[in-house]
Image: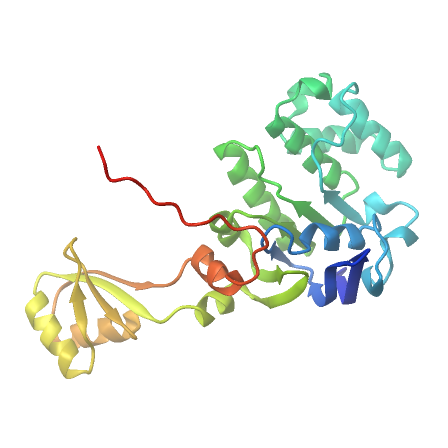
Length: 310
C-alpha cells in the first residue's frame, strides 16, 4: 500500500510564503478531497509532491520516496495537473505511446486506457482538435497509463459533460476500492461531497482541516429534523412535552432543531402518530467549507445591490 506523506512542507517564492509547514497524509483505499480558496496553496503543494518545484523546507514523499527518485514515475504515480499540456499536433494515441515508451509501459496499455477514458474512437485525431472535455479525458487516460498506486488529479471534472462527471466520480471511487491513494483538488463542493471519503482543507498556505468528510460536516452542523405528519397538532404537542420545539415552514413541513430523526421517529411511533416524511438535515459541504474558510479567501467579490425595479 502506497500513501502520500507531507511533513512540515514549506515553500517560499521570494518574500511570499505559498505553503507553510503543511503536514498531512493521503492514505490508500480512499479518495481525499483537496480543498481551499484560490491562492490557498493547493497547486503549489501538488507541484511539490510531484517534484516540479523544490520545497523551501519539509518533505513530500510517495511511499517513502521522493517523486524524482523514481526511474519510471508513471508506474508509481498518475497525475493530471493541466489538460492543455499535451502537444496539440500529436494524435491522442501517439501522445500516450510516447509516455508509455518513456516509462517502459506495454503499448497495449495505451489502447486499454483510451477505451477506459471513452476516447478510443477519436484516438487518431490531433489533440488540437479536441474539446476541453476530450482533453480532460486524455489527461485522465495518461494518469492511468502506468496502472499507478497513487493518483493526483487537479479539477478532473473540468470541461466534462454530465455523463463524464458521473464517469470520473465512479472511476475515482473504483480506484480507491482497489486500494489506491487518490488525491483530488476541486472547487466543486457538491461534486466533492459525492466522491470524497476524507478532506484536506488549506487556507493561505496553512492546513485548516484534515478529517473524514462525515466528521467535517458533523462538526459544522447543528442537528435538525425535517418532517411531515397527517396529525401535526398532536405531534407538536408530543414533541413539546419531550422538550422539542417544532416550527412550521411555508411548504407544510416542520423542522425541529437539536434533534435526530431516530429520536423523533421513536416518539411518534410510541404515540401512534402517522409520519409522512422524516429526515435529518445537515449543512452541505459548501456551507461547511465556506464557514471554515470565511477569513482565508485571498480574492472575494464585494456585495452587490440588486435593483428591484421591473
